[in-house]
Structures are given as structure tokens and as C-alpha cells.
Image (cartoon, rainbow, N blue to C red):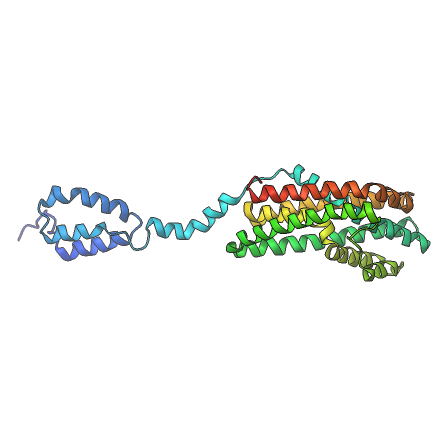
Length: 311
């Protein structure tokens, strides 16, 4: 009976090649390759052997799990994480309130209140108008913000183009507000005129479907009066597109739009509980030149800060 040898069988070149291919495709190939290179001279001494030639070939990068491949798999997430920055919710809320406190919204709310009084509307009707109008503005602003942020996040190469467009538009709207202040002082008329079809639509609102009609009026107001109300919102969307992801962006625009509605809701409540539309109109007439100048200066400053990457 022959004794079984306890020595391991010799490693053939075929087995060595199979092991080498496995290591080449494994995640640990980088460390194995560098270690094999160190041990090359120790075990073989000569660079002319087949084993040495095989080990030297390992100096080429691994095929599947290289650093470059990992960057391709995770680079988008890492790149996006660099853009995510926290913005104070109080700052967003304040910016929304300042945007909502503008002559355009004051004029429309006073107009709706006067229409309600003309039709002998009661407190309940004015509350419905306030609720519907505010919800319409909020919905339209959210849809616009989600559309822009969703598009920019889906197509990241559009970020720089959208940022440049937002800077130009914000600056132009700022100059427009300042020009409107000059025009108001000289001619007592604004260049941000409410289209007559929207006025006709709001003037025909009655008790029937009042909530739905005021909701539609708020949505249309957001569209046709975007240059008057949406300038700060545009600059905010540009900043969010560059500095946040879609999830946090939704949270931020929600906070901003909530602040935008607070002056509208407050004014609607005051009108419902006895404030005269004439008082609101007179206040708007006295303050709208100053509000235009302040708004225009803020918009131009925002455009400059975005252009020079201060924000």
C-alpha cells in the first residue's frame, strides 16, 4: 500500500493563470497587484521567466472595479452632494413675506373685496375668495418650481444655462421695477397693468362656484403678473437649482410660498372683518413708488450676487 504524499501538488502555470484572472476581476485586484509586484523580484529574481512576465502584466488597471469605474458609478451622487447646502427656513419665510407684500397683490385683493361688496357679499364670501385665491397662487407657484427644479435635476447640464438666464431676468426685472417707480411718480400709472380679461373674469365671480372661480383667478394672476410677483422667486429657484437636490428644493420652495401667502391671507382676513377696500387702495397708492424702488434695488443686488457667486 503506497503512502499518500502530504506535500501539496505543484502549482502549474494554468492554475496560476486562472487565479490571476480571478484576482484581476476582483475588487481587491488593486492591492493584490501592488503586492504581487513587490514579491516579483523576491520569488523569481529574473524578469525573463513566464511567471515574471505574467505578474508584470498585472500592472495594468483592473477591468471592472477600478477607481475610475467607481467614480462613474457614484460620481453623480458625490457631485450632487457637493451642491446640497442648507438654507435657513426663516430667511426663506421672510423672503416670501416680502415678495407677497407688493402693490400688485394689494391691488388685486382690494379689487376682489370691492367686487364682493358690490355684489352684497358677506364675510363668508370674502373668506372663500381669500382661500381660493391664495390656494391658486400657491398651486401655480409650486407647479412652476417643481417643473424647473425637476428639469434641472434630471438634466444637470442645464444648471449653468438656467443660472445665467435667471441672472439676466432678475436684473431686467429689477430695472423694470425701478423704471416703474419713475413712471408712477411722473404719470401716476403703472407699467405692471392687470390684463382686462383677468379683471373681467374676477368681476363676474358670484356666489355660485365662488371657491373654484377664485382659485382659477389666483392661478391666472400668478401667470400674468409673474414679472411683478415672481422675480424674487425666480432668483430663489436659480439658487436652489445650483445648491440643492430636488427633495430639499421642494421643502424650500414650499416654505417660500407659504411666506408669500401670509400677507394675502392676512389682508383677506382684514377685508372680511371690516377693513375697507378703499383704505387698502389708498395705502397702495401712497407706498407703491417706494415699494417699487426697494424691490428693484433688491433684485439688482440679487442678480449681482448670483453673478459673482456670493450667494
